[in-house]
Length: 378
Image (tube, rainbow, N blue to C red; front, side, top):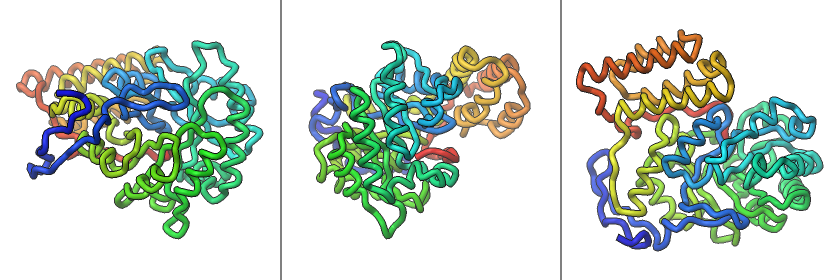
């Protein structure tokens, strides 16, 4: 089957009800942001406290066409904070990669863009993204994140200053607006384009909605119709069928996945199989999940050390094992581990326990076990 032909007319959804899932013609071909090529429409979202380098690498291996770092302080970059610079580190296998900045001062944001542009080529990102969607109080109280949606002239000034300071493509991740009475996504998208942004990602909720209720995909479509730069849709994409549906219903150029990838980087593989080959792949087995968790942990140890890796991995392990037999008991044990060595042994013992019961091939449906939303992400 050609990658540009429609998908099969019926796909069985999780509840067994057939629903048409037709991909737009040419949807599998990907898109470009400022000359940076994405080989498919499906990218990993910037996720505060989640999208560490190992997580990003696993997503790329499974088919994400681009990844982003968690949000990085523009102030910290300009001050030369080593901790901030460490957030910007990435493996070459992660390219194309965007580093997401947050801040509210145009001059400081421009200086931060210069810092990233002046890094050695191997450390320099492919894109610089601006967080204009984080709803968390400590961010919006600094007039950053979603607070910027209330000040369109400041948005324009930030993008103009950054675009003048770097030759790297500058993009932004936004929401529909501050609340239901100020849904200004079309105005903001137009202002971003006029100021020099190379693309815009839209989480189809307002700041007031945070991550609650249904995402308003129709407004992604309105923004797409209003601008010429690539538009990436985000919000309520939980599986392969949702991703195809968003492309079809909104006309967006790309689809950004966040929560759907927690403990399940294979979601990108399933989406691409569906849209490129019309193939419905099964979710990952218990063995795949646990082996990925061990590998993720090992990569994290190489980045941050044994003890810190063990702490950081607790949430990831909880996502990897969600829906598996006896996962509640294992999660409690995970939270008591202190080193990566202990955690690795625990995961391998758990896999052995499942194998002894003939359950290593058990594959829970990710849609039946949704994960919690991280506290700070856009």
